[in-house]
Image (cartoon, rainbow, N blue to C red):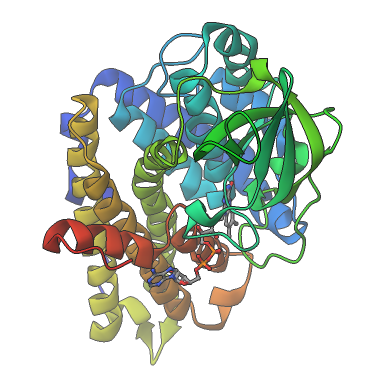
Length: 398
Ligand SMILES: Cc1cc2nc3c(=O)[nH]c(=O)nc-3n(C[C@H](O)[C@H](O)[C@H](O)COP(=O)(O)OP(=O)(O)OC[C@H]3O[C@@H](n4cnc5c(N)ncnc54)[C@H](O)[C@@H]3O)c2cc1C
């Protein structure tokens, strides 16, 4: 049987010709880093429920922490370069990408956008260097898709705030130095004034701030997930983000992170696709490689088509983002489409690998399990459907 070299996904997508030299350089350096420093350990880290904290300094050196922010020691990457960098991280593992998304889009971004100069100078340069790690506390045990129902409260006491409540599913929390915690406050007297949501910079070492690890995850095992428990935790006025009030604050951060996720999830999909092609070309059943079977080819073609379409969508949206023209509805469309397809592609790849598909020796089952979390966090698939449904019909179906 004549077996030619396979056409690469990159040749099919062909965005290569549209990238700047700098974008290519950033993508290639993250690619090398992931393949040399992370992938050889990926299965073991996943099995051991370990996030590789020793790789943080190198990620910082490559400008991956707060990558798309300007100033304060951040790399100031454009949206395409940022998306490609995250995609390479997620080619390695969604846990690696989650770490960078949370540090940059969910912790550094709110300080950068809503913080005062003193807060920015105090936190951002250290965070860009990876010397201070951040997390983002919005979700609670009883408040997920409906964050407005949160019950974490902040009450003013002189020039301090007293925080009480619990946050759940918080990426990076177990080893974070700093948490952006979103809490409901009653301005002035506890009994009066409109209830609103504000962002508090809670630092490790403050009394009443604990971050127990969530164990037993079968997904995102190479990412540290914890709770945030706040018990009469006193936070000074100087640690309140002055520039934002209300749910729009955390939602604007999520919008940043979701864009990165839409781009990045295709990295996991590409890893699964490439593994499936290579496996199908060498696995012989019924006397021929299974890639010679039309059913297998149909699956591979569907996987490749969806990756190419998803990549073109996010590339276009990233260029729009660079022009400040990207809307939250477009971000929802991209997150829903790309993560949904990445998960489906991982499941198809798992099937193509047969029994071997469940072994950690191959990246597929790890990506498949990880993508179950990515499907749920940063707005579930249903939440993004409802955001788009509302925009397209003018009727709120939440
Ligand atoms: C590994 C991991 C890491 C995470 N990291 C963070 C983090 O760093 N910071 C943080 O704040 N949060 C984080 N999260 C939390 C994540 O954002 C939430 O899990 C997510 O928002 C969903 O909330 P929930 O799990 O409470 O599900 P629920 O909101 O209870 O939803 C359960 C189901 O109901 C559906 N549903 C809800 N409302 C509707 C509706 N109106 N119509 C139809 N269906 C609906 C949902 O789509 C879902 O299928 C993380 C989660 C995971 C799993």
